[in-house]
Amino acid sequence: MTTGRTRFIRVVSNRTFIVVVAALLGFFMTFNVAQKVQNQEYLSRALTLAKSISVMPDVISLVQQDDPKHQLAGLAQVIAMRTGASYIVITDRTGIRLSHPNAALIGKRVDDAGAALAGQSTTTFNHGSLGVSANGRTPIFNNQQQVIGIVSAGFLTNTFAGDISHLKNSFIFLGFGIIFLGFVLAEILARTLRNRRIESELLEVTSKYQEREAMLHAIKEGVITLSPDRKILLINDEAMRLLDLTSQSVGRVIDQVLPQGRLLDLIEGETLQGDDELVLTDNFSLRINTRPVRHLGRAIGHVITLRDRTEHIGLMRELDSVTNLTNALRAQQHEHANRIHALNGLLELGRFDDAKQYLGEISSVDADLAERLNDKIANQTLTALLLAKVAIAREKGVTLTIDPQTSLDDLTLDLNAEITVLGNLIDNALDAIAGSSNGQATLTITESYSDSKIITVRDNGSGLPEPRPDVVFEDGFSTKIGVGSSHRGLGLAIVSRLVKQSGGSITCYNDHGAVFVVDIPVKK
Image (cartoon, rainbow, N blue to C red; front, side, top):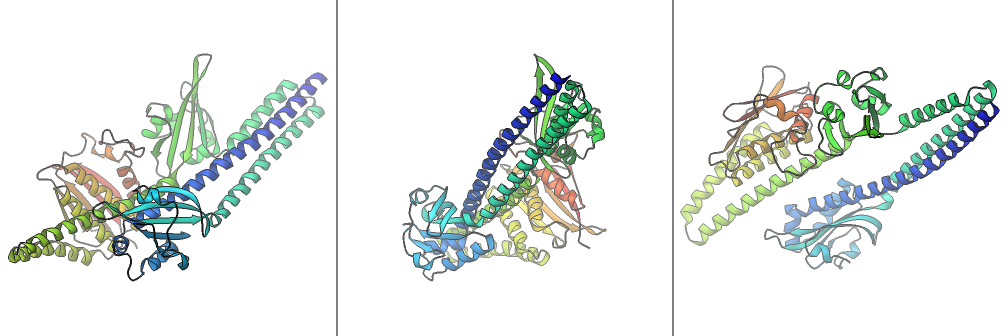
């Protein structure tokens, strides 16, 4: 027995050493990865901000005119204050600064601008006059896609050093906590063995079990293990939180505790599309990995890991909303330029009557729609989006009719959610009729008898899948074959979730094409 106790104490000491070394190495590597991810995030934010500024019509116009009234410096300062950027620098086509937080540097040439002036967007950590910063540069193009300048945006590292310091302290605290827990467990088990003379084999099993439980429930990812007959063998706290399960689920078959759908198919390994599959639930956006476990050539079950990506999807949705609006406004600007060219051609040919008639036709159509939208929708962002979508439809050779019979300003959806819902539904309708000689889509906004508004989007395209049109709301479903995006099949799923979270409902059916009906309550 003494030999057994001595051997166990030696094993506990060895395991304590392993816990210490593994914890230190693991947290050191994890912290480095997290820091790199954070640095990359700020580089991405800087480049995204620079690209957003580079397509602003006012910026393009002022850069083309070499900013005669020195307005760019003030505009850059306002944008920097609103976005939290440390600086925004705008140059002309030769790299001469037109704006800079340090007024003394305006009019001087920037360094290392060759790539941006050549039409390439770059990101780097820049050692500039203001200090080390996460910098994003992108060229400014005119209507002929010629580079006329550069936009450079950056975030000084000392502005997000506090985030890194907090992250480091958190990792250190958690690391020492786990190390201390390992020491405490080892000491308790050793004393228990000496005082009670428990069999060494039993204590060794107990030690392994406690270590496994402590580490399993301390990790951030959700973990589930399934037996070959798909019974839950183990589930940690994070997995129970993400899947809304309890510890009572252990021992039950997985399809008894989870509803039928894509989430269950991914967990069971029925849907094998690759690693890190994204799936939406009512409350979370999850990344799921399913791995079979084999021992001596025999399948003994599956291990499933879950990661919460809800915040990531929210940021992606906001970015998609901004991109959607930017693309729509760019199309509207392009259409306006074409009309100006046509009008200019008529005037140069001396066809003044034709020019007057053409101007009357285009102004009456757009002015009538803009007036009706402004009467019903106070938010100018939504109005601009809808007008721009009409321009996009005309570019595609199809017709988009908008009939706002009531307002959208009192919905329970926020502005980003409204842009996402309307943008996705209209884009799907335009995609369905693109290439059709008589493609028509309509957007109707009406008021129901209850305290809600009805948004109806209809097209005369090929329609929805039968016999279950509502399959389009399931995440992962897409009719766009060959699209290589990792987020393919999420558009209508996100729309459905946003509508349901606001207390509304969304339905779809076929009626000489696809019809989507959204019922959203108004604010009380």
